[in-house]
Length: 210
Figure 1 (spheres, rainbow, N blue to C red):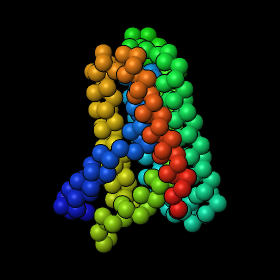
Figure 2: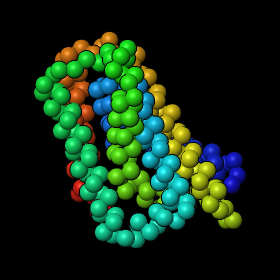
Figure 3: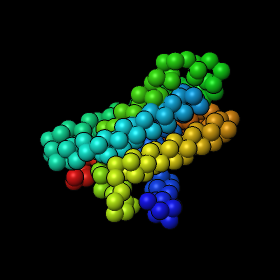
Figure 4: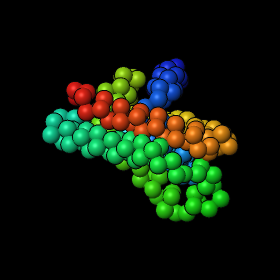
């Protein structure tokens, strides 16, 4: 792979990452619900899933999932259910209005918060089969003749790392704005918007044809 090709991939990957999707919504939701640490661990969970799916695609396992329609559909509907579950939780928080963003000094640092953030990030991403399809269908477009599995792995991990950096910047920005975001009317509005967006992504995933 030449540096020109790799540079083209970097531009493409950054443009793709900047388009808000389920990863953006889940990270936003968890940062609002649990503070900076939970949001950061959500980003790590998403990145872990990206790395797993990228490596699976490079190893050829992703092609097996893509060819097995029942398995693909099972993963897709699991993703739909999980996005809807997270969306409903956010909407319930918006209705209840019982929350405080400034938790960075105590519950935010507990291991359960970190585990919950990582788990939700990982599950929301790993149950989205479109991520695996991306690694299988798009990344090979940047391979040159003679390129092998190591190059595919490099591209997949590059995409995962860029995604992590973007999500961590998102979490840091929301943390800096916590004085505004922590106001009850603002939090309720953000929870309502985030919940609606998550439900929208769930519906879109449910209605998309593989």
